[in-house]
Image 1 (spheres, one colour):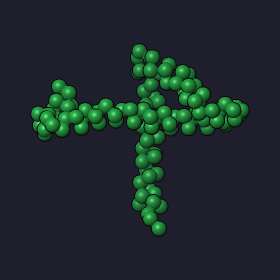
Image 2 (cartoon, rainbow, N blue to C red; image 1 turned 30 degrees about the horizontal axis):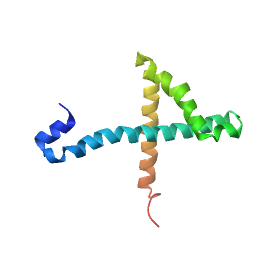
Image 3 (cartoon, helix red, strand yellow; image 1 turned 180 degrees about the vertical axis):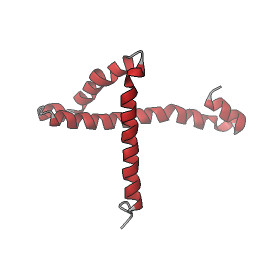
Image 4 (cartoon, rainbow, N blue to C red; image 1 turned 180 degrees about the horizontal axis):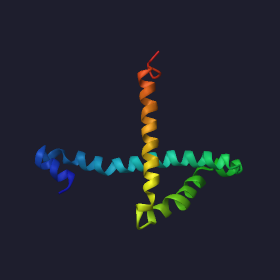
Length: 113
């Protein structure tokens, strides 16, 4: 059973299109957000590596490099068990970011003037 079908049965069939739209659009937005962040990180890495500015300031090139050299090979791996350590590292990074944002929230760094 799909989420839209479950929504139709429990809430209303006339509004199931909302859930189907969200289920379709949310992953696209997530992919776009991740691509933006990873492109920014790779741009900085290429800059630190000393590549010419014509390379790291060419955003379409950086996105193509990210896709062809990093994301496609990872997506093509049949057994993802080798990524366990990087998953823990990513989770640790998410937790650190959450702590930093929480600290700034509680010390009122984000308060309106």
